Image 1 (cartoon, one colour):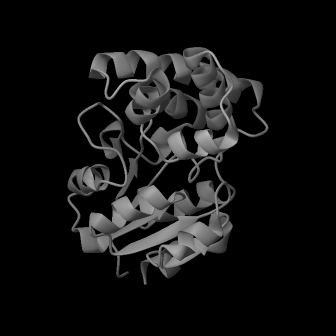
Image 2 (image 1 turned 90 degrees about the vertical axis):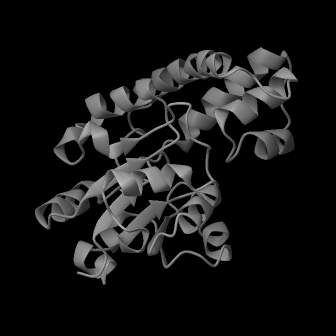
Image 3 (image 1 turned 90 degrees about the horizontal axis):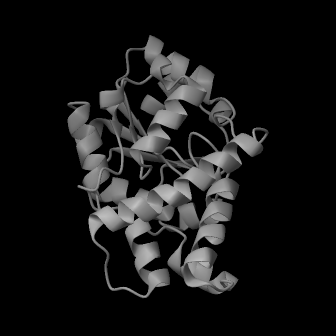
Length: 226
C-alpha cells in the first residue's frame, strides 16, 4: 500500500452532527449577546471558526483569556451533548465507517483523530461510540488550548507526529474547507473530502481534495492507499 497512515477529522466526518453543533452555538451565542443572530452573521462568525474567535465576536472582545474561552466553550458543549442524547437518531457514526475502520485496523494502518473538540467531548465520544476499538487516547489530537485552529496546520502536524508518520504518507479525511487547507498546509499526501454533512462543491472548489465521498461505503482501504 502506498500511504501508511490515516488521520480523521471527527465532527462532520466520523459523525454527522452539524445540526447539534449549529443548534447549540445559535442557542448559546443568542444568550451571550442577548439578541437573535441573523443567518449571514452566523455563517460569517460561526462556521469554520474556533471557539475563541466565535466568543470574541459575540462578546465584543478582541480576544479572551484562554481560561475564559474554555469556561464559555464548555457551557456550550454541555448543551451540545444534551442535544446529541435527545437526537440519537442523528448521532451515529457515518455510514460505512465502522467496517472501514475494522479493515484499516486489520491492515495494521496507524490511525489518529485530529479534532477541534475539547477533552470533555472526546470522553463523551469514546464512551458513546466505543472508539477504543480503533484508537488509543494518545492517538487523538484535540483542542487543549495549545494549538492554533484550522486552517493552520498545527493540529495535523501534531497528529502526524503522534503516528510517527511522514506527512506525505498520510491520508486525511475532512469535511470542512478550513480542515482541507490545514491538511494541505501540513503536507498530507492525500486528502479525502467527506460531504455527508457539508458541501461537496466547496470541498472540490479548493482544488486540494483527491476524492470526495458521502459515506465510507464508497471506498475501501486498499483503494484509498494506492
